[in-house]
Amino acid sequence: MSDFFSYLLVPVAIAAVGVVLVLGLVNMMRGGSPQTSQKLMRLRVLLQFVAIVIIMIAVWAAAK
Image (cartoon, rainbow, N blue to C red; front, side, top):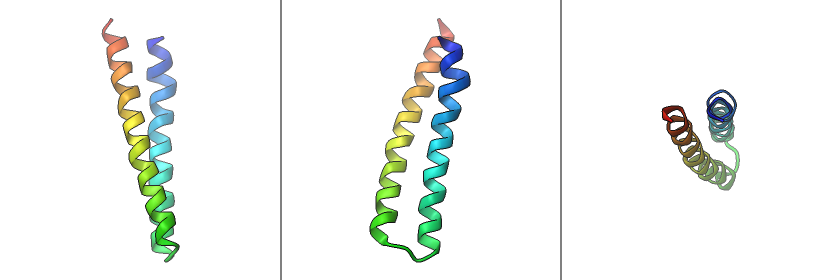
């Protein structure tokens, strides 16, 4: 189970945060809708929380 979190879920969670961050930045640089940028940045914060939880579970599972 530890390998599942470490090798699959952690990179996926981090990549999801990166993708949403880049989408938000691209939208801002192109002069897109401020509401869209705001939604993407809120989604980024949520995904960061999920990524931290997944990382903490992976660390916990690896210590067992």
